[in-house]
Image (cartoon, rainbow, N blue to C red; front, side):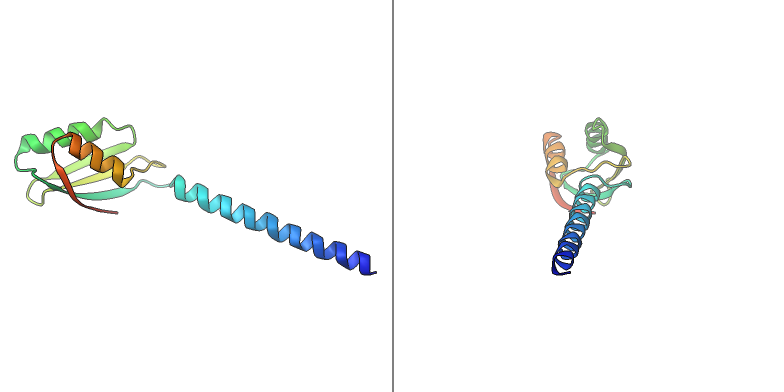
Length: 109
């Protein structure tokens, strides 16, 4: 009887461990690979003319993760929408903007 209870206790612990691993792996997968398109607002310093906006649009538009880009010169802001299941890190955005000759002031998601 005692052996049977000990075995049942071990089985319960094993089942809890399996569920814990499943939840952690699922959470990691969802964090790494979003199932939706991400919308990102980027405040850019130095964007003053339509050519500035066009050059940023062209540079960021080449990124395979980007679905669409909208530039607002008045707000000095870029709205980026990623493709479904894709994401851009802040570092990726800052590099692309800097490579175009501008500075990122703020990134909001």
